[in-house]
Amino acid sequence: MGGLEQACAEQGAGRPPVPSLDMWANLLRVLTPAGIDRRELPAAVRLSKRAVRTRVSTAVRHRWVEEVATGRGEGIVRLTPQGCKLAARWEDLLRAAEHSWQARVGLPQAGKLRASLENLVAAFPLEHPHYPASYGPADASITGGNGVDWKPVYRTGENSTLDLPVSALVSQSLVALAMDYEELSPVAFSLSSTVIRQIATKGRRLLELGRSPGVSALIRHGFIRTSGHGGQQIAYLTHRGLDVHRAYEDRVLTVENRWRRQFGSERIAALLCALEEVQRSLRQAG
Image 1 (spheres, rainbow, N blue to C red):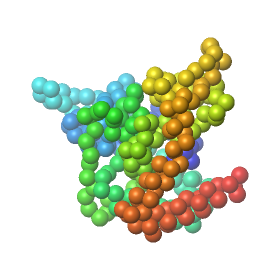
Image 2 (cartoon, rainbow, N blue to C red):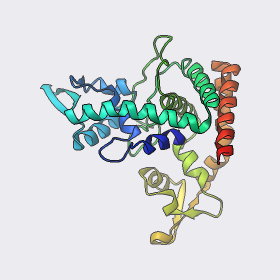
Image 3 (tube, helix red, strand yellow):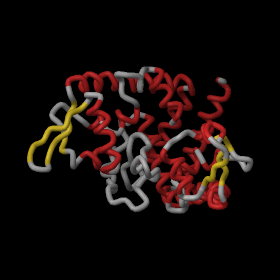
């Protein structure tokens, strides 16, 4: 996912006035000049109402979209003229980014990965967002610990993966993995993998972990403790954090084994093989 996002950034994504991959995949791609009922947006992008509100507010501020009232408590969200131009540009940008990424990893490896992802994602019972996104700014889980804003969107049709960009296929797989992992863990998959797993027994500088709401939540809920002041603060795992660290690989393996039973061992083996070939190609390329 990081490699695909980097390829988009190299094409200009995320640099004003061009929206990021997150903004495109999780909002702008489903909008038109005619607009969409704002109540239908969460299902259209497969996100929580809270996550959609955050993105709509950002897009309105950048004048990519506008909200238009159509009645009491009702309204639509539509692309502005500027948003229409950027949406058209984004389609070309995404196509160029994917071609760049394919060349980087190798066309045979990219093709094999895409085929294995299509095969797996088509078997998922639920549709998932086209870019990994949490329930809300203060809740890094996918569906929300105590949330009511997220509603599942069931997959329909056999061709639900056709013509999707590779980034969307990777995202749907990651989100499905995260949802199953989070049934087993008190800490969201994203924070378990990018924060908890990155803190060694001797600790790590807090600044290196970033000042995200997720890190603050881990401190507040007793998974991380800090020592020191200012830029010299060191983050340490508490007993609760160490438990998450130690159980991470077993929980991921539990999900993998569940997927083998649910979706078939051949599907999972094909995906793992394709991922290994992509990683090997990237290492060889330096």
